Length: 281
Length: 159
Ligand SMILES: Cc1cc2nc3c(=O)[nH]c(=O)nc-3n(C[C@H](O)[C@H](O)[C@H](O)COP(=O)(O)OP(=O)(O)OC[C@H]3O[C@@H](n4cnc5c(N)ncnc54)[C@H](O)[C@@H]3O)c2cc1C
Ligand code: FES
Ligand code: FES
Image (cartoon, rainbow over all chains, first blue to last red; front, side):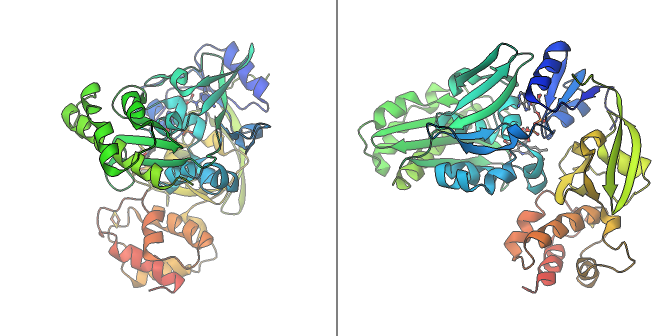
């Protein structure tokens, strides 16, 4: 397909990338291109300048901060997450979920930064990172700031990353004995989610997030409060999820009605919490 | 600051040959391969990233060339289906496709071969499950996949 004419820059440093993004109206970062190139074909997006992040090696690393946070560069691909010993040690669920995104080709190109910046409500990583209490480091000409998942995901294709800014890394607390779970219903084996849920359980605290039911991940706070106390038996977890569906207003589409999504939200949340609880150390 | 441009000279290696060509930024890698280089073995099926007919290797990894701009491949090593039997001799995988009747219309075949070749490079003795995961991004409308999976498994000796 023929794309609309577009300009291209391939900066060598983050600073340079930020100055190009700031200098040109309609400039947009290009990461793996696994969404952006398609939306450009469909003319759903028409950036004037693509700022290719491919040469920014700093964004391709996985490491630990001085405080022991797992730091994942925005340009880290799903395939890289799957093969990372740091991820395996600190938060294996990230690799486990990455292995179910799209297909081999998409996993070779698609990036963590692109996945969250698209902020597609059906994407795998927004809901997972919300449950894991990740923070997002954003850099612009006025410096660097860090925001929580609640502040990061603002809507479909809308995040806290402003014009002229770049998401540089995603910071995930190490599991430290917590158990993580991910569940939901997909269209096909590794397909797009109709509804998904992610949970993390540490001691007598649980964090639960639901995806695909609103423009950004929704925290199941009532369920979390009911679970405080540390009883993760089947009956307690099921009882804790009661009414979660009714508190949501999910969309209806060809893959499922809003009513069905409400039901799936409860089922997925229960499964994710039970899985997380079983994996606690 | 690198000023943005609407065309760029890309230098890359394709099937072992060095290529240098100025291309418009909006040219997709698949069009560059097919139209600029005349390597029409790489197919375009859906043009939306779903079918995998356009699969090539970029620096050894299977990617869908309809979801990449040619300028993004600047400096890369690319191989396409033409590169498999570059010396005129079919690879073991290609022979196995023939023996197992793993193609009918052949539209998906170049992509299937490139995905399976990438798998065999990583995992020379794949099981059926490994093959199914490896070709998940490749759609075949004819064969029902059974013979394709058998052909790839047979190369690794696990048949
Ligand atoms: C066939 C197919 C199946 C898929 N299935 C799934 C699936 O099941 N689950 C899933 O989660 N995803 C799926 N995807 C989407 C895929 O995961 C994309 O890779 C992802 O949504 C975008 O990542 P990217 O690196 O390709 O980003 P790009 O497409 O390059 O960019 C996406 C957007 O993010 C912006 N952006 C990227 N990086 C940054 C940054 N560092 N700072 C600021 N802005 C940035 C870009 O400007 C652009 O607007 C699928 C895609 C395809 C083609
Ligand atoms: S043509 Fe590229 S995936 Fe279908
Ligand atoms: S052989 Fe016809 S599409 Fe696969």
